[in-house]
Image 1 (cartoon, helix red, strand yellow):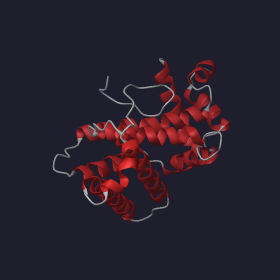
Image 2 (cartoon, rainbow, N blue to C red):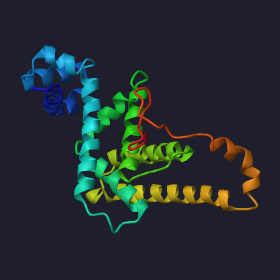
Image 3 (tube, rainbow, N blue to C red):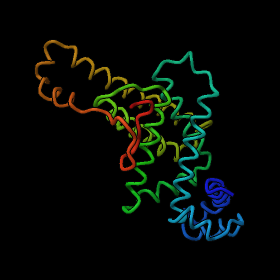
Image 4 (cartoon, rainbow, N blue to C red):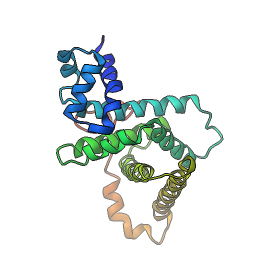
Length: 228
């Protein structure tokens, strides 16, 4: 059994325990016992135990999102609608609300908060890259920061949503995306407005010096795909 296979096997076994014990040592030990994965192998692929399984659960959702996007025909949608569709695909990929709720609790802890922020950033980075984002300036960062806020808020709303078909969540998501699009239009308007642009010449000049990363780095979240 390869390391990725072992981790996926452990994750599958862990999910039935997460609702009761969270992403905890107890859950990890139960997953090892239930899965039949050798304990030494389990510790090798998950040195942090259940924390690594919680990360793997989030990353599995990212993979399912992109797989669904590739299989869907979204050619008739506007760009903003495609962004909303990908967020919806990502949330629906996490079909176990209790696992997500327990993960939110885990990554809210001070020692794991940076990891949680990195996972959300990477999800939003993946969404933009999937849609072919080609920004190379400060917009590369602002797009991901803004979408991280939208994604995080929508997940929290979804966790408490008991509406039929979770329609309230998708309505909430649509409103948040509309807010983002209005903000993007506002930014573009400032640059194009002859009366306002001189007032922001200094700040804009500074922002124009900020460039997107040209290559993936292990110490930063996200990556530029197709950039050299």
